[in-house]
Length: 233
Image 1 (cartoon, helix red, strand yellow):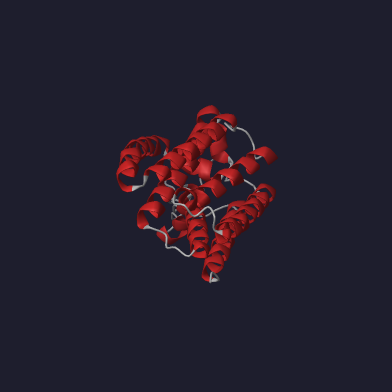
Image 2 (image 1 turned 120 degrees about the vertical axis):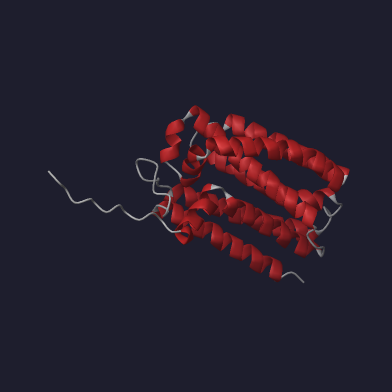
């Protein structure tokens, strides 16, 4: 018996995919940390060099991506719980290859473009991030995990000032403290609003309400940091 074909549901447009990719690939976190370092350096009275911004962005992305990939290796079901785990679960092979290439290339490039103290402090932060990934592997967002995240992100924001002799600037520590408080509030909000993706891990075109709220919270923190930098004398 002949049956009329059921029209397929149109896929999400490119415009609708953008927030999902930003959230899933942790690009919002990268933007927030870059804005935090820019604000700190504004209060120190020095510009943010392009090479410092580049390697900071690379390091933050490597850390976030490694955390999600490690989570999924132990608990694949997490791909149905958050947008970031879902994104990394769907693109695990490609992201793993890209992560490895970027990690291997970034260290000799940093040795060429960055001063030695910045490379040494960056290595310490990378070691701390690796320890965090191991200890927090596959676990929920407990208080200590949020605290560790705040410490690492604040350390990343202070990385360039501390490695270039700006540790004595009161503006650096004041702006760094504001960043730490904002990051802690952001993570607390994320912990309260966390929901999940659709049960089958799809829904790539639109974010669930909890993930939209998290992306909006990151946007609010990003705006606050840009305002903080703009208020620098």
